[in-house]
Amino acid sequence: MRYAHTNIIAKDSAKLIAFYKEVLGCRSIGETRDLRGDWLDRMTGVKNAHIVGEHLCLPGYDEKHPTLEIFSYDEVLSDGNRGINRCGFAHLAFEVDDVAYTLKKVLANGGGQIGDLVNAEYTDGRKAQFVYATDIEGNIIELQSWS
Image 1 (cartoon, rainbow, N blue to C red):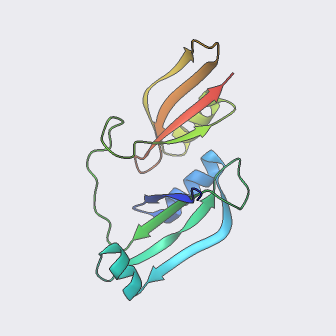
Image 2: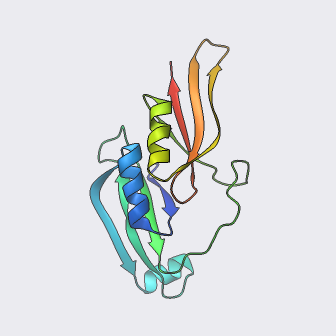
């Protein structure tokens, strides 16, 4: 058994894919999707489902996965509450060389910031810097750096 991918349903998959490639170093590996058919309707429970998008290789990994799967349906339901403390999946975390620099890239490319950029020291002596940010569709991203 192995972990395969995480999926984000986007309002505009092309724009969100570009954001993750430009800002967070994800890259194309030739796994684009334009899916429809009876099997997809049955699997999703969505009548006349049509999905487009792409699997992106996450930074730090080769083409053997895991991937970030960004899809759009023709009809997307709105989520409403995306707080860091809501039940369910909360955020994607990326370990970066420079948290402040990466946060600037997030903001310059249309993303947002939640809370403050903080420094933390753990009881075992490790130090880290963290900030929560959002992509261009409001999905929460944790940026972290360890020393």
